[in-house]
Image (tube, rainbow, N blue to C red; front, side):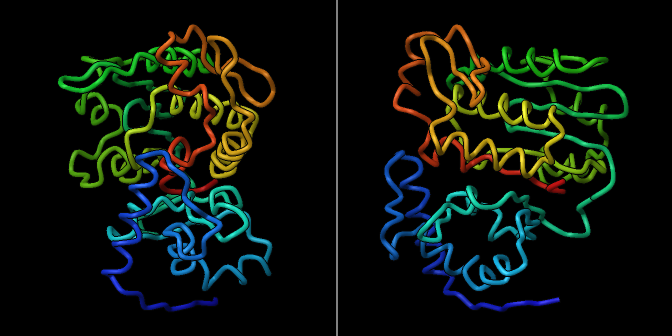
Length: 283
């Protein structure tokens, strides 16, 4: 086993993380050509010390054990001067190696819609309407699509999507880690969630494309990496009122004019893809 220990300034780290989030929220350039940019500096501190080891050993998938101080880092948006971390590696985050089950059932969750695999049945749940918040009209389309790819599933939408439903289906009411915690505590292998509020069109297209890869037998962390790459390279694109995937398949359809305008300039900015992370097993 090889290890590296690096001491960093908490004040500087938090300042850089705040700057990175500011750029992401504004959908502006992360200025990755500048070695002093937040994206580059955070990479140098968190990944740089082990980057040569990863390269030498041909590592392509990582399981990152991050405590609460690091769980908010959008690792996919960190940049080494050549490529984004999320473009180069498939990875997942775990709050604790002891909580990471590498051999039990498979589960995927988002903060706004979720699918839970328990035995032979599939629980598909999500919300498209919220009090005091903008609606997410594409969530029903996303859930129907996921539901159509499986048998023996149940859909719980809006008022039917409650904490009690999740607790009844997957157990562990004492979880302190939110939906991702419920997944891990219930013995699921993995959960996918968002670090920030991602555009409804972008997140729906992301998960649709991710499930295309998963249905082809691609490992989960690799499926997320391939989806990120498709976004980065402009292979997920708007044509008319549809969003198409790299192979030309329809990911979303019947988008209204407002929805089209939100993504008409492309989905390559890290805001659209770097906030979606895998928790638990990367396989």
